[in-house]
Image (cartoon, rainbow, N blue to C red; front, side):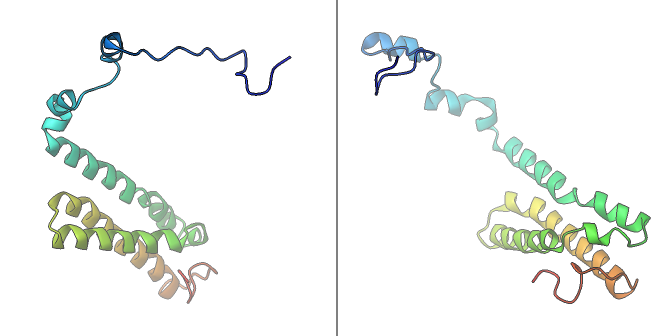
Length: 146
């Protein structure tokens, strides 16, 4: 039987250390600002910038798989591609590219510029299949993205 307001029996509650001993107990667990500044990743921001650009490249180039499938099927898989993701990718990358150029914040430009170019290519290919290839799908019609 449990009393209302008491802790369940399956939890173990450790008392929080207090006083001068607390600093010795908690020191290995909590990083200090000095230890974060001396850490190698924080003392070399170019590594963080390069990693962010690399992750952006992977993210923005991931729809290439669908575009390759679209070419292989001669447009029959166009209905499986959501136009909103490509359109939103275009607007997102154009916003962040312009922000990186005009702020200026150079590390924001390369990854988002790649995404901007990639989204223009993706949209152009899909709309070429609709306009020139005669492929008709409800998602990629006149009101795609609306």
